[in-house]
Image 1: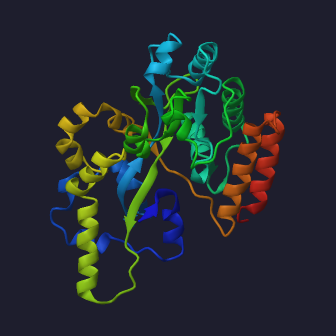
Image 2 (image 1 turned 45 degrees about the vertical axis):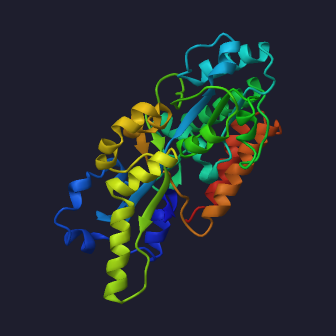
Image 3 (image 1 turned 90 degrees about the vertical axis):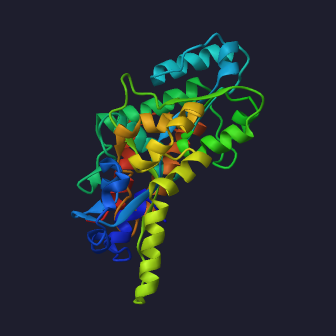
Length: 329
């Protein structure tokens, strides 16, 4: 299993093997109706190397009891509305009413703001956050962090204040729906689509994992067993099992068909499915410095959270310069 943003690296380094020979021998491979947008995430140079297993998107988690105390009855659809809600929540006694998952691995939420504007973070292997979209993404983060008085919490601690009822709006991955519903206090939780920057998002980066064939075995029985497991894990049955216990969305229509009643009874887990049409690549930075680039951007975003950086144009210029220096020539 490999993170969706690391598939390209696995293919480029020759670790993952094409699944086309296996697929060609399956007369009924299409029966599970893999969503094209999800299948495309694991397709490189026209060949399938990764089958989507568990796919997630960013969403909002809302403590409806807390929002009610602030007189808020509708879920926000834009970040300006989120900030307005923060002001009302401050007045209702919530000191730090929000957490926004800037620190999720792979700069996922920065990519979410870029894709919301229809722009990838990289284009043709080059920096693409050096223009208006990149600056708008940074300015949006600064405004959220400042005006909502957001605390700088680690990934491990980020969900605790929400579970305790201290944070009213928690922006995170759909993968956490099950965990959040199990850990929350005595209040109603509702999930909502990821807000947009003045308008609905044009796209969102797909999180989650795919199954890739990486075995070096030449034993036909081992190879066949691995392929059978891959088929089961990504089938309607396997995907439905994952969807029921987490918040990941199924990669195929067969699972969605079997989950109709489940989603009717568990609407919080259906939010991701409603956003499925927005799926875009979760881009990994190429070359040997990919992880270093991730860290450079992480450090820059944390400087916004802590207040060490308030000039977003200067930060944008610094990040672009550092990332360009680390990208392959």
